[in-house]
Length: 118
Image (tube, rainbow, N blue to C red; front, top):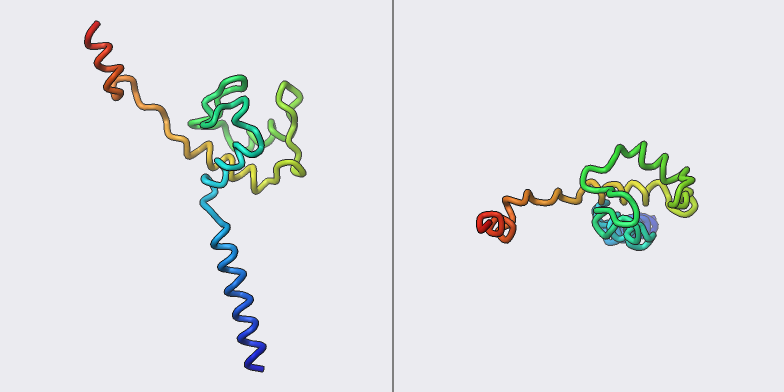
């Protein structure tokens, strides 16, 4: 009986350890997925836009974005849940939310110095 309890505890601890080891913050995982799924190809590595629209910082609402991603009929193909799970999409959205805004031009020394010299 004691052996069964010890085995059960070890299984639970091993499962929890495996989960903790593979779980990253959702924004960090979202950044990895953003690259892996290919979002960066049109939206840039930080969602700044390029061939596709700017997604970050301050992305549109989660509901609006997931609706578009799942049902796009434009240049971007739709990403069904088979291709991009809801959990993966939530992590990508967390990444987009985590992208900081660019500093104001006056806070960038080279630009401030350029402006002051003119």
